[in-house]
Length: 138
Image (cartoon, rainbow, N blue to C red):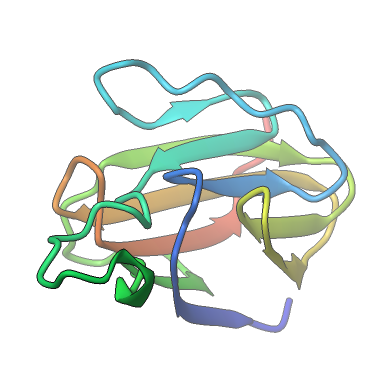
């Protein structure tokens, strides 16, 4: 596997970052308290909503949406505190990272993959770091 890196800074209009199998459009429900949720093939990470901005002027048309910073790469977290560390299935072998508006895809191989997530702050994150690695066989 060639390690691939996805780095972006962009608004999330839905306030949720999805990481999971590119062929599965089913989204895990996000609990009201805003914690990370998962299904067999997807991880839903609550992030700061693009409209969570401080109004500092008289013209609402000039408001810049809040942008979340995301970094996703192969490997495992070394010393970071993790908000999530679990395994998902990738039947398609393609890891999708994004939301309903836009997705980046990383080509992996079909199977079980460990997903680790560090967030800052821990709820409605402004900075998200994701690692993926092949999970141990059962």
